[in-house]
Amino acid sequence: MNVQSPPEKLKPNDFASDQEVRWCPGCGDYAIVKSVQRALADMGSDPAKTVFVSGIGCAARFPYYMSTYGFHTIHGRAPAFATGVKLANPELDVWVIGGDGDMLSIGGNHTLHAIRRNVDVQILLFNNQIYGLTKGQYSPTSQVGTRSPSTPAGSVDSPISACVFALGCNARFVARCVDTNQKVLPGLLVEAKQNKGASFVEILQNCIVYNDGVYSAFTEKSVAADRQVVCEHGKPLIFGKDNEKGLRLVPGKLELEVVTIGENGITEDDILIHDETNRPLALMLAGMLPPEFPVAMGVIFRDPGPSYETSVVEQIADIKEKSPPESLNTILNKGRTWTVV
Image (tube, rainbow, N blue to C red; front, side, top):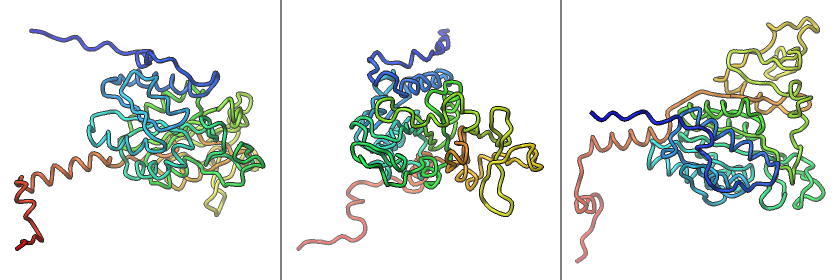
């Protein structure tokens, strides 16, 4: 009897291609590709069943650096291509890679439909609040006042919150992390993969050339504990160097406020417990902005539902079962036909 030994567990480097990684030195994308490779190894992913789909932009180089299948597609259309891949072969593990300009500007509608349909893909949005590949123009997520070649006097546009956008598209999994957080990001990507349906992960990524330090006000080690709150289901929304701060609902109002435990009679019992299935709460958390509020990190919302491709496959199978095959001639002569005399 020929018994095959189980395949050897792959390591992160086994998911790296032989291509030279060519991002700017210090770019946050280096950290992200390492996190993805580590997550794939941790999950025991099969490279032969893994696909990365990207559009146009700095982030779009991603498929070249993965020893998997991949498509470098056209600007903004990666979610549409990924939907086609998943429908054609639902067994594939499909990842969508794009930047804030690619996914929220020209590709905003495609991102919306992939999310609302709940296609079983992982959408990783690299958000550096700038267009990097085309030399630093402002993007849909750029803050008011951003000076760039296209806004030399400062942007006057109101920016998009990527996570709020996703929640507005009826996303069923929304998470956020910082590119360099190697202790958290790989595990967060594993959680995204385990979610059945569209998983949206906003990765706050630093562009060292055109928008360096855009997130430093809440990502620097000296301030991160006071300016970030980690969302963990069933746990109080507490943060701060000494876990002395927390979020609670303003009495009598549906809005959040930051309070200090031990002041004005506030105790840990007053702090809001994170419920990742609560969409209104998720919208409030995703929309929090510094310096008034901490930035929400981790899984902000998770409420799995039927995935699009599963529903499509089941529908096709049901139709085939109820409708026996017909000849092409029968189909062509069905319904309203006419005879030429």
